[in-house]
Length: 326
Picture 1 (cartoon, one colour):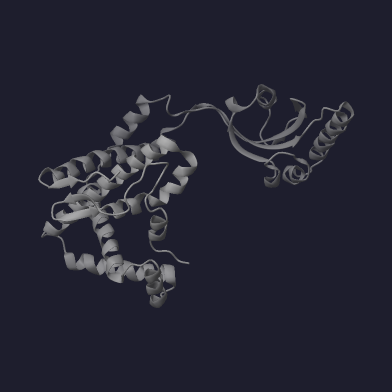
Picture 2: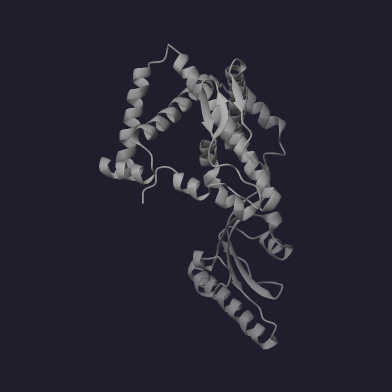
């Protein structure tokens, strides 16, 4: 069934209990000027992550994780209320244009998710126990918050090429890359039985002869290899040389690309390794990392500008947080 919101999950997790710790399903979580944030809204925001957290954490650690997520989500919802109030007060914004854009996004959503079938869309809303008006209101608010963040924060971010290069030059260790090898491997397990070990070693030697005669490594790996990558033709992908055991890295040190090693014995097992490619150790070029540095600086600048903007919105706002009932 095409789901629109996570209300069912939120209801199934009503109480969000964890061995004695319970967060109330609904009620007022915070007063923000003349509006409120409900506990249900906060629970709905954190509900998608709860199943994963319950697999990772338990007891007091799970309780602390839920409390941290509750506080963070409540903070985000309070900020959203303040941003919406700033939008309403801004007389320079074309509100009719925004509402037309929202209507278009609603139409696009129905087209994309329900092949344009409005009745199916309304049926899904009924199953989620939410009205069309409420659903549209939430979409409108998310669009407005995103638009305001874009205008007040993201549009004001300027990343200087000089700053990007200075970051690169000041952090040579950060952009140093160890030697990397792109490998294909055929693994034939050894045996504690001496006679069987000889048979398996002969199998590895025979496989090497086939490869030297022109056999395809991937096909042979699918037939013979006994590791978890056999189905992928023995493809190990890119690995750092430093992460390989010396028994493997030493024979590969002088191996040319597109060449196959001899039979390598390690802990009683037999390996045949094809070196597809090699990235030598060294500092990555500026062009190779410029994009990632720009993104890092942009994220940092957005966080700083956003904090200043939100602090300004909060300065004269009335905010009262209601502690969750134990």
